[in-house]
Length: 480
Image (cartoon, rainbow, N blue to C red; front, side, top):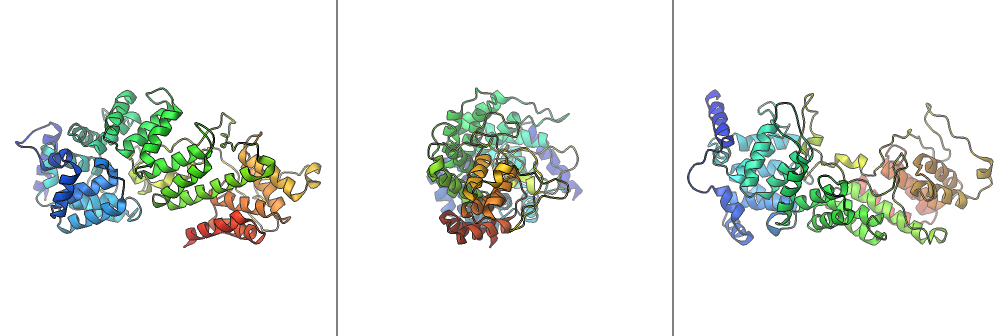
């Protein structure tokens, strides 16, 4: 066994020193081939072609729309023949829904691919095969393979670079993320270079790769290495979203909901949020509920001339949509890495960013709910009510709460809105009860609680609120 690992180590060194062996490798052949040729070989039961086609569906490569379902079918067929790439792709797919996240399966499949008795992955990587190099780059950023393989970002970056130079654009995106996100550790030799990172993404967008569009959009949004341009950001986010890239679908939904580059278009926001259901059902459902409430607010006569405003930051800075979630490691759901470990961003990051997508970074005191009484936790003193509030009608209190919730003319105050909605809902206002359902669904100023959210939506529905009645059908599916 020790001899085997010495050989593997030697071959990896050969790969990094760019040793070349003869003719074009098989991975290069499929990278350069057109989609019809690749599909033809796949239909003829070529396991390598089947796995490459599966990766094309995963990444939206070769003009395909992203389809995890198609990728899964092809990867399973290839893996059944014990092909190393089929095994790798199957492990990769177990990082996300619908197969994952399943860390044990990722580990099993990655190690099976890496420890293939014939050493095909490593041998091909030694020939600078772009597909094999990409797979090794992914494996060397994976925490699941510990302790058999120790993640090594320097090796990963070199393999992504080799793969990118071989024309494999998904690797170009990963290598760009190294440069854009300054994944720097002493001794790795990896330096931040936003201009170079964006150039890699631009090249990948020429092949219409969705993840390249998404991260280039993020650069324009943040002004990272380019001049900030929200309209250009939306163009790239939408190009990715229309090809099935879930993270962009959620981002585009917020762009339209809050009118970042023009008048709000909540109908389009709902469309993109619904498209994202297959990417992350929970977050998409939450956004759908939020946008339905925006529509309700717009239809209210008292708000007819008021444009929905996006939440302001806790510091009261200029308001716009939440920043697109920073790309997290594929292994965001993995066991914590050892201290000092730096992880690689991935275009298919875990959805653990969900607690930051509302754009609010402030911490709020947790509130406990009684359906008949409003209370706060024992460490906080309940805010006193002004005499004027006691003379207000239930609907007037609800309207005041909505102003605090949406930040209409005032700073967003979810905790204050929660208090007023409680008072209004306990006086029989169905709309206020619906907003409380939304607050607990999204965790706006309180801890997320899906069952409590349903309780309030049910109370609103019984009170005759039509939107709450529609929301219940959607929200209940989250409890199944």
